[in-house]
Image 1 (cartoon, rainbow, N blue to C red):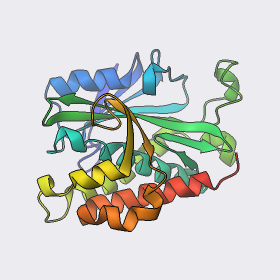
Image 2 (spheres, one colour; image 1 turned 180 degrees about the vertical axis):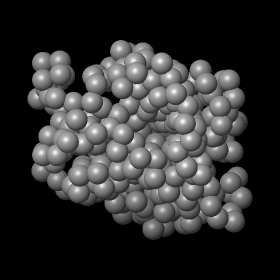
Image 3 (cartoon, rainbow, N blue to C red; image 1 turned 120 degrees about the vertical axis):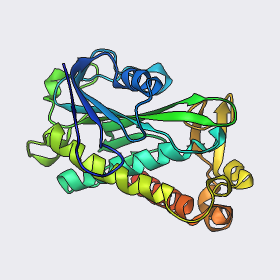
Length: 265
């Protein structure tokens, strides 16, 4: 059962498809993206039967969580798609902080934790050629109000929920509205400015910012990404090649990463 509703005049969430259950919202998002659904279209589900995370890991998705995927169609080169893992992480971090008035820990590249226990994660996937991206799917899972005993026994000691951390009943629908606001803010920042998109990224800076493993040059898509330990010492110099919009996103991601690294496990 699906419904299509209009949330507001913002780009992300203007089209929202809601499912009771699906195998994977990311798979559904790929399907509707190939059908031509617009930039900013969102698909959610109350439950996923085959939710997945990075490296093919499963994402346990019982009812009570927010499971959604967002279609993005930025006009950028394939090699620059890494920025959307950062952008989405930032939006999810602020969504959680605003929802329960507590700051989560950002564990690079894409996990949000409380006291070392996972509360949210993202999975960024893309389709396109070697030069340009056709679209990006930003998959997001946030444990909202799911009872901890609804998770498999092997996961219960390693996960937490917004309700558990706050002592309040945190409904996924309210978290979704906050997420849409945050995603619109950061995506609009990315799209704003007068610098042509082709000039917003510096190839030299990209190499200095990241340490790659796996195949390809596209962090978050074809290989694993981690911060270069030397980056924090060279951030000001290495980011000079980025436009203001990209630099703001990188600065915020680095700030949250460093803040998370200082939190006790």
